[in-house]
Image 1 (cartoon, rainbow, N blue to C red):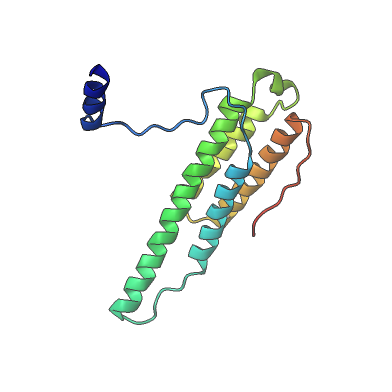
Image 2 (cartoon, rainbow, N blue to C red):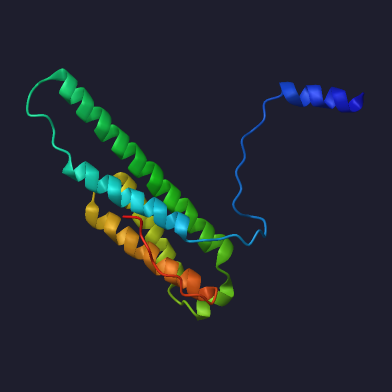
Length: 157
């Protein structure tokens, strides 16, 4: 009876959405998700820069242009935030103080990469997006070397 009452109570109360990766010792880390997100930022940036606005005052053409432009911007910003979150997980949860002896520039590397994620959200700047990819590549190599592996840097595009 108590179980039924609690179950009914829990079913009518609002429940918050929670996400976790990773404050628990799951041990599942990979730099690939940051790479995929950073690569999407670069791709969307290139697409945005290649867009040509309509030459006419055709309302339908402008609507299509504005829709596509805004979708690319939204994806670029979402993926820049995703890259930042994935990098911060690696920085704060995976890397430990003992890694600093092998990677004395670890903190600066991650800090700069996170700043590049922000710059990519704020601007449509291919150079910044390419810098972000280079920073994520450096982190990729640091990450796998710290695990005693030398996984190749492979991009999807």
